[in-house]
Length: 141
Image (cartoon, rainbow, N blue to C red):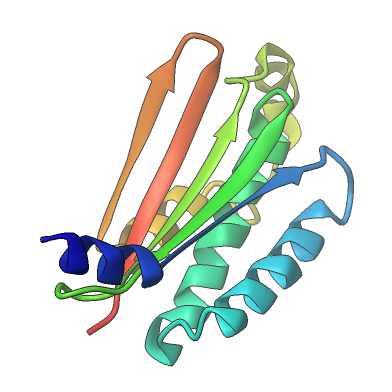
């Protein structure tokens, strides 16, 4: 049992990074995530989808929520299929965003959630006082 636990722990990676509420943050966070996925030897078949999920969840936090926000990536390889979990936690909806949404072109915005749902094996939202976490899991075949 202990040997199995040690094997699982050696095969797990996790990283948390802040998401600054500034222009250019999405591309910077995506580059950091790409470097980590390469370092962790994440299965190539889920890397591109994972980076798109990271981009969509981080964009959502910057555009629609209050700071602070953070990205958490978890990569677990074990006896089960390898799984990458992407979580973005923010301080909840920004009430001021509702007032500015009237001028947003729906052809350019509003598809992020659908993209995440299409790419992820599992996804969801966890709400607690003052925090909202949107998460998605991508499972290697």
